Length: 157
Image (tube, rainbow, N blue to C red; front, side, top):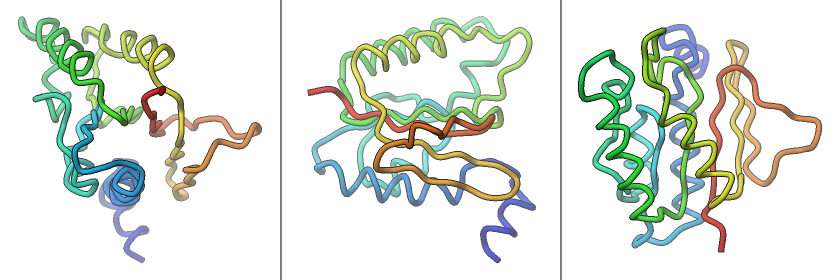
């Protein structure tokens, strides 16, 4: 019932999913590790009990058509590259970014390349109106991300 009520009120915004993601990261990392969430889910830092690798814990401002959006994106990218977080959580849910037609999407292109080079995918969370499917110990070969999904990456050794 809680999951159903949450879905009715919040759609595919990953509030409940954040709890399980936080628990997973907490179990797979140490207190001194940092993480980065590419999206507007600061609750993941709270649930994981891990510090952010960047000062940007919301990404809405990075997508707004405003003069500092590109500069803010560049700063977030540099902070993440400098901190080398153990985990990077990529939230591919439109409501997490609120990207519009005129949004600078440089950070999204950077994230794809950065993760491919420096991280390995360790989790996929598929979110839909009918529910959530968690793949936290490897994605089966026949499973593809849904329109709204979250990818969890761990830094390569």
